[in-house]
Image (cartoon, rainbow, N blue to C red; front, top):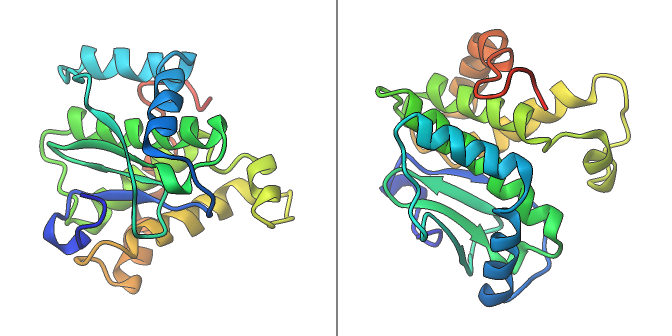
Amino acid sequence: MAEEPVSRNASKSFLSHGNGGRTVEECEDMIQRSLRTPTVKFLKEHLEKAGCILGDKFIKAVHCDKQISGGYARGEGILVCSNHMNIQDEVNQVVIHELIHAYDDCRAANLDWANCAHHACSEIRAGHLSGDCHYKRELLRGYMKLRGHEQECIRRRVMKSMSANPYCSEAASKDAMEAVWDVCYNDTKPFDRAP
């Protein structure tokens, strides 16, 4: 699934990270630990309240050939790339980020991943609400800017994720991101405010 070209299924959304590696079995154990964290439990509960029941196999560890940490695909669930995971926090981040995409997909009956504005909006929300761009994570990635780092980080990561969408050129992705930024950045559902 993660090895398939993204163009075969435009509903795929991917989160990219660095290298390292765990076995699929080790990563499955890390996913099980992740499922017990408060934020993941909260998101799963709100997905179910929105009418989307997650089965036992909704979140899976897989070996990925691409340099991605994980992804969400409508009808298939969430993949966590075991060979790009090193520590529990990385798994937690991927699971939370992708659960936000799943929540967006669940609550918006007309969400179209081939629509650049829809994809950008979900990426903005996932970047903002998952903690992907917390300044400590940014420092570990080598980005030293402290003032204004979060929005800059989200913009950078939205563009990186959208680069895998065959329906969105770089210019279309940037235009879509800017057009929906305020509405999507300020949409914190299902949270009362950004965690």
